[in-house]
Structures are given as C-alpha cells and as structure tokens.
Image (cartoon, rainbow, N blue to C red; front, side, top):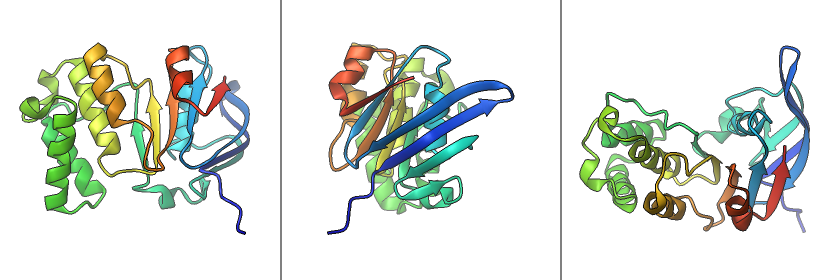
Length: 209
C-alpha cells in the first residue's frame, strides 16, 4: 500500500532577514484534510511561515514540501491549488468587489460563466451581494475582508492559508466568513490567530512559535 503524502512537510525550516532570525527550525507534518493552528506573539514568524507555504517567500534553510511540491523549486506546481487570506485584504481599491473577483477568476483560468455564478454565490454567502458593485475604497475594512475571503476560496483550493481571518470582522461577519473558510471536502488549512482558544477549537495540530 502506497503511504500517504502529507499535505505539508517541514524539516528544520527557517528564514532570516540579514542577521535577524524571523523563523527558526520548524519541523512538522500535516496530513490532507487537517487544520494546523499557528500560535505565538507578534514577531514570532507566523506570517513568515504562511508566506513560505504560499510560495511567496524563500526559506533560508531547511526543507519545505507543500501538496507534494518541494519549495521553492516546484512552486509553479502550486498555482491554483492554494488559497491565501492575508491579515489585510490586499484588494485593488479602485475596482469593485466583483471586478476584483473576476480578475482573480481569470488568473485562475476559471470558465467565465462558472466564475460569474461562483462570484455571486460567494458574495451572497458573506452578505456582500448588494455591495458587490461598490469600489473597494468605499467599503469598510470588515467588508473588504469579506471580499478577500471570497477571493481566497474562489478557485476551491486544496490548501487554505488564513492569516488572522477574523481581522476587522464583527460577530455576524465572523460567522459568515467562518463558514466560507471552514474545514470540509478534504480541504487542508493553516490558521494563524492570536485568539488561542478559538484557533485550537478548529485545529487537529498546533504549532507554537
């Protein structure tokens, strides 16, 4: 029987910025469909870890394999398979929510008709259907975060990387976004959060940095 390949495998992973160690000696394995909670104080390397897993940042040392792809050498194989929700929405402020999502759909080569259906489904799911035509610059931080969550799951990724997914959200919006990025359908998740108990409630594995 062929052994299962972990969704994420790290061995002595580290990242430096000059002489400063931003992330040091992380080793773990996370199986497909599991959720990892990453905890620790500000500056401990949580966001650095997510950026490495997303293929946005090169590690300084150690080995990193995500969805069977050694990084950074095979980062191209991750395209379309990872969804990343940053601490800040990182949307184009002069575009509307729908336009931001349509752009993301084109980048992921989603069929135009299917993309339009998916975009409307997601905006409705987070209570943004009626505001989808408004420029992001006109939205509150919480509304923009809801749209960013839609973008993260638009292409139905195998792996979701969530950096403080509740940032800027009120209680109602937390519930809506939480359902959108929840575990299920074999989805693997890595959640960075300063809300320890909330993160641990969702986690199969925890990493303290």
